[in-house]
Image (tube, rainbow, N blue to C red; front, side, top):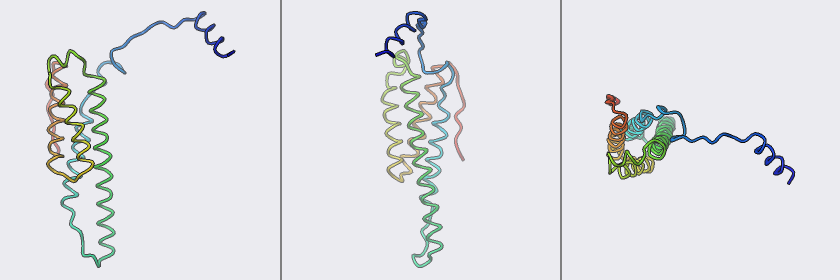
Length: 158
């Protein structure tokens, strides 16, 4: 009770100025490159997992090494797919505004599909889905820079 009264008194004596902003941070902090890097890592780990050949069952040391590598690839793929999803969701929910939807009416669908691909690449070892994720992130990347009236080169991992 005393705390509430003190808080009210402080507000009366020193009211805070009302402020507004159109995003969570200063303009220019958004960039889809981190989603691209994460999607590239998902693709890379998927390729590595599919290329990894299990050793003979009676070679314990080789099996331990195989399982260690597979576990590491899985962990990286999972983390990076989650990071790609987080980065896409921030762009979708914090950067893009109704005016952008007028220019790109299928924007919500593109983001929804891209984030679903992040989930698919976490759940599966699916090279097709990993490539689709890269394509989806590339498309979002291009749209993002069009909203800034800039063309930026798309880099792909080798």
